[in-house]
Length: 367
Image (cartoon, rainbow, N blue to C red; front, side, top):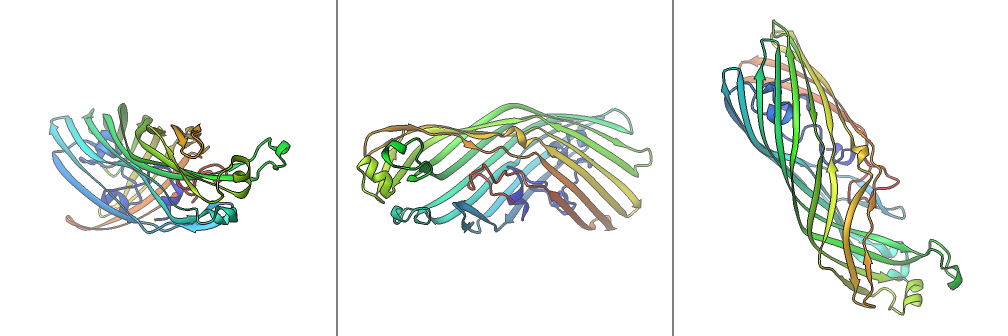
């Protein structure tokens, strides 16, 4: 469960009992699930249904080194994938969980940042669910080589609530030092929805003549995710901020808006997976995946909030992220007890994608 803190919007193996139990090494395997892992593996007629539940617990700094922890929400994911074989050609169709985020912090008290904020306590969260629909084709060139391609579309839903501390800048003429906290301002996005079309996945697989060894290589194009929905907010001023504006320190003032949007991306990915039979019953697997999360420099936020206290309107700013690329190092082993029973084990190491110097904790805590 620790990878829920370390990864980006996706995990090494979000669903498929077989893939998870083998550490996420699935790109050299065959069957209907290959529509997601590597479309070159489409080679049979079958229907697969999946459902997974994940739980994680982690802690992270919310603001000014005040240690807070997430609640224990469960993450639900799954999919339905089918394939139909016609000689050397196999067609695949499926819908499944592609990526997501579920990070929440209850009752964060910003009086810890400045005592005059009084009881300015907020529940902060970042929630995202991306379902992908895919249509793919696998083609067997010969007994050794297979090729595959899939076209993809995504449907996303999200909620997001975060608080920014407003600090003084260039107010020395008023006797206020730079960095002094003037207010705490919360933006809350609800009922966010969006869709994307036109992405694709390419794959190739190789298997030796005796089917003892093989590898798979796949490429996934990037996906831009933009969701639009409702926006509202709240602001509370510190003693210093209240003195400058005439507001009442610690009082919560509503902010209104006609709506807003968030935009980010699920980056391009390159995956290499391999397998080798040490004996007819003992299979070992290994792989590496690179996902270019460094392209996610910021979370693009669009929307204006109007303060009901002074009727001023403020445009929301982007959340700077500067993420790191994600690398998954995967290994697995399988022992075939008989044709219907297997013992499997796997391990995946994932580096920390989140840049703790930039990203808001509700977008993804550093892991």
